[in-house]
Amino acid sequence: MKKYFQIILLPIFLITLFPNYLTAAIEGRFMQFPDIRGDKIVFTYEGDLWTISQTCGLAIRLTTHPGNEYAAKFSPDGKSIAFTGNYHSGDNVYLMPIDGGEPTRLTYQAASRVVTWTPDGKKIIFRSGFENTFRPMPRGVLCTFSPDGKKMIYNPRGNEEYYWKRYKGGQYQDIWLFDFDSKNFQKLTDYVGKNSYPMWIGDKMYYVSDQGKNGIANIYRYDFATKKIEQVTQYDDFDVQMPSTDGKQIIYLQSGYLYVLDP
Image 1 (tube, rainbow, N blue to C red):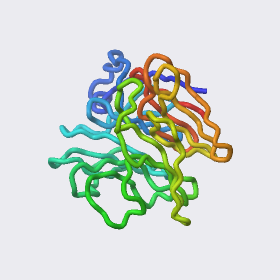
Image 2: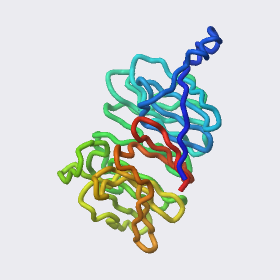
Image 3: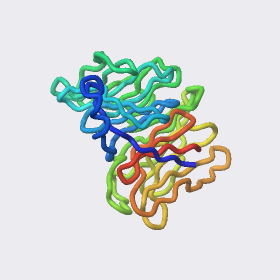
């Protein structure tokens, strides 16, 4: 079951200064980088971070800095938001409370993008060209963890957001499984094409692929036990983009709108 909800974008200072502005609010579209944690949703719109409740269509703006903020991810306890901000001549990782406030800078090298949190909430995973010799795998682009944190599924390379139909070139992504205890690697996808945004939910993996007959990217489900692959969404016009999960539900973009999927 998927749910579409209308988003009304309203800067918080306008609520205070101009209550009647509510009558002029318009529907939001073309958000980016959504994330979800229970009832709460965060996304990027016009280069700033906004939050919204699934039960209320009013979005609240969290940031107003001239630099861009994106790739926001809720902490597992739902109290903080990690995000990438372009504040000091480069993209770095920042942390702030879920209701906004002054961000705390966490990284000091350019081109650092937030990917996810570890399940225990103690570490933030980010990607960067910065070299580190203490990584368990040589490289990675996107990842997600098993609920116990002992395994990880990830994209070792590629571009997750190309919009070239039926692309089979060198930037397509495949998905691998890594076991932190045994140090074993296992390739999970063999389709030559888009296999992106792996999401570990229960005993299944959900991910985005364009392996359907029309080359449109949809959400697919992979069963770890049987290795069976099933198509979940059935779009035939525009791709599913930028999905994210809290381990129970998936939020994603399609044709400029936000949808929540109950797996």
